[in-house]
Image (cartoon, rainbow, N blue to C red; front, side):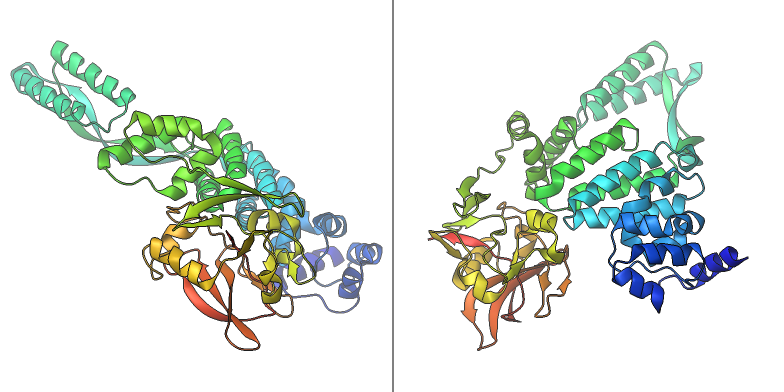
Length: 465
């Protein structure tokens, strides 16, 4: 009865921090005591604090199994990283498995490379779980070819020829569709047929499988360019298990169809998409662009090696200035930090610096991008009110500037808004305590000039002297 009461209490009290001795034991790292308390049913609810996923599983393993939904709500990080594979292998836990995949996707998109790996592993297990993948029967309206009666054969033949001519004049159709149209025309010549509207029953992927595909593709298309290749590896893994449709997988065939569509429509190729392809296939992408008559090319970057720590950065000339087109990741002092003190976040977003540290953080012969240089950049990108759409990594990124959303820390070293906000110091002071910075958001159009406390930690872009 005690265990049953514990599980019910856990479900009712999900998300409420435990009081008293359990919390004290967890916060002090006394996991042996915490494990005994849970085993004996002394704790009324689950509490994870900041413990690792492994320690959480060691302490709450039986609870995670018995009450997975409540466990996820109470300890989303520890549960997702420590228990994802087991929960996604359970035939009865599709909703909780999907919640976990959503959480890991967000972690991965925010620069946690382990999150991408954990998403990959859990998603592959989910795709082997037959209970999640039962197809759905759906009635759809379609058009089918039907043999004509003798009295209407001439009319049918003329109609079939007109249809085939119209389809074959469409330069955007692919070679497979063209062959199908030509085959149908040839068939009409032998036995005239007509198109008839009909309702048929088709099998569609399960809701779980469709949502998994959507979430995985969003991870690729909306994550920072610097980690897009890691997401592409995940997509390829899931495609092998039929979790990603052939038409949705970004491969060279996809790139060719994408380039052809833009060439026919005479539209500029979006840089945010092009640069993702370039990161994976570079020269092959240029060859495809050549073949369809598009003059755009994969961006040619310069290279800056920081002699202080050996890190290498991409550089590019924009608006007459040679910009570092990655956020700086040099560790000068305690006046800088990785977001959440997570080194993987530094690899994705660079470091966050106080204003004083930012003034001297750039390598020799480079300097912190000035307010005036930012203005030149914004003007090149269409003016401050619209510039973010062309400068951010998840926008059109026309100049390969690839602004990433590293968030910030405040004067108390509390980190926030990673994956959503990008903030860059300039050299200009507002007053003794504040200085000006540039900001943009992942779904915004403008680059704004804002006044920020000098003790906040923001990103740094450097410009060559």
